[in-house]
Amino acid sequence: MTQTLSTQPPHTPPGRRPTADPGHPPARRGLVGLAVRIVLLAVVDALAVYGLLALAAQHKWGMFGALLLGTVAVNVIYAGKRHVPAKYLAPGVALLLVYQVYVVFYTGFAAFTNYGDGHNSDKPDAVAAILAHSETRVPDSPVRPATVVARGDRVGLLVTLPDRGVRLGWAGHPLEPVADPVYDSVGRAVAAPGWHQLSYAQIASRQKEISELRVPASEDPNSGSLRTADGISAAAYRSTLDYDRDADTITDRATGKVYRPTSDGVFAAADGTRLSPGWKVFVGLDNFEKILTDRDIRGPFLGVLVWTFVFAGISVAVPFAIGLVLAAVLDGKRLRGHRIYRSLIMLPYAFPAFLAALVWQGLLNTDYGYVNVSLLDGAHIPWLTDPWLARLSVLAVNVWISFPYMFLICTGALQAIPAEVTEAARIDGAGRGRILRHIKLPLLLTAVTPMLIATFAFNFNNFNVIYMLTGGGPKDPDAPIEVGSTDLLISLVYKLAFGGSNRQYGMACAVSILIFVVVAAISVVGLRRSRAFEES
Image 1 (cartoon, one colour):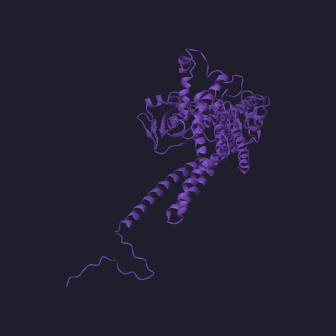
Image 2: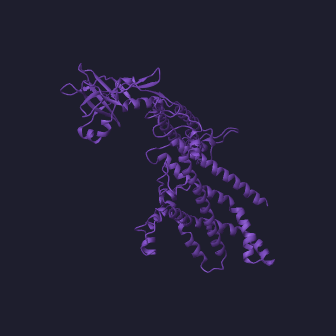
Image 3: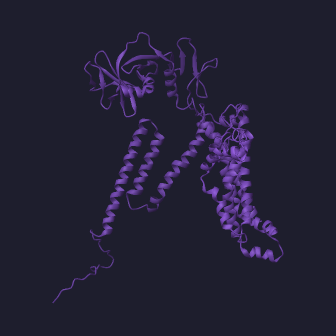
């Protein structure tokens, strides 16, 4: 009697789930997924440990705590099979905290400080920099054999003492004894554990960095430092200033002049002389007060503010008017070839805005631009260097870039209006003009008003067109800050923070807050008006 093999799964008692076959593909996929998850968590934890050690070495305890908390949260969320919604939300929340929340809070904090060039760090760093900048060679100081060594990107000095003792130090790190140094044939130390000697070619390629290298002799900032001029020897240097830690004063040994700390983060003498650099301190509303009340800054700031409103308003109104007219003309199928016309109108919108601005910059060049050379028969018109023509050029280019978008929005809004509405108006005897003015336009404005507010906010901060076309110029030579005729508030913020030699991060953050307040107020008022318009 032939025995048949059953292909049915064995009977499973009620209430018990069938046991998964270890060789079944889903089980293998589960093991692969678990392995991948373990590897990824291990990589994340390794990077987190590296970051934690680096932050601890720099005493950045706030960032240390945030990174530690984030690492623990990642492991709790992704180590097990629970918290499924959190697995999807965690990356977005992390990016939101890092790139939005942290940036907003730090901008708000910096706006109330004197953060900027000359006030970049804390007070101990400022004291060390002041003493270092006033250092001179100690007369008759012995010249010690020294070797320029490196570890990664860090450069240090390996100094050999007469008793064959060896000391190693680098910028910001005082000399300390070295265990198991490597000597050359004449008894000079040339390497240390983790540090290797730089060749002459490497020294030559990093000459500026090595010539500015200052190795503190000890933790005391008044003890001076060692420096090298030739890469093979080091001499002692000492500051002409003395810092009294207890009295918190700096004294010039030659003149006896005493410098004391002030509330704005600098050391100043009784006659008003100041030492540089200073340090970052909380200044309250000083940045805002300076922007609004300082005569030298208030004038350029108000000029930029008015121009920003004009630029944003015209950049919304004119493209909207052009887009609306074109959308009304091409609405429907009465015009032959209307699809081709729509495609041609959308061409400017197909180019990236920054690229279009660069193209127009070349076209409007005074000497070689196509507009002057070809269209105007060699006329010498300073489109981008005259203040008023530059403003006109910026507006014209931005209108050229923006009107296809408005055409697209208006076309969609017009086509969304029910045909029954316009048909009823036509039966009542209304012409195309009255239908557009009294029926279509109100309905269209109701739909596009939030978009117009968003476009105004975008053009209020339209950095690309300004920076690519004119760079904010032409520059105002009478302004105490770097500002030009076409600068918007956002480009002014960029120049305050990153342009020129006197970068003022705190004031730039203060202007950023003012921009937010203005845009938020306009948006709130506009949305309330649009809501009232809808209700009416």
